[in-house]
Image (cartoon, rainbow, N blue to C red; front, side):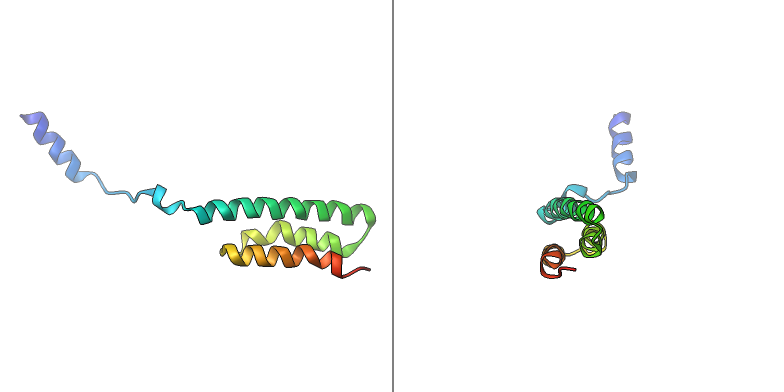
Length: 93
């Protein structure tokens, strides 16, 4: 009988932690995957720009690698990533 009373007291004293699995949604997975893909494209642009000694692809590559850390919305990440990936094709120096 004392064990049941101790378990009841311990259960009341235990703090409630939020369920972290509810926080991890599909949008977080999509942001992670889109950031990985855009950073890979950015690495390719950076290596190409460095080998060809062209500034525009190199800067686009650096920005594609860095900007997913600062943009939290998935739609903004995809749109900005596509714009940055198209810039070296539009601007030729």
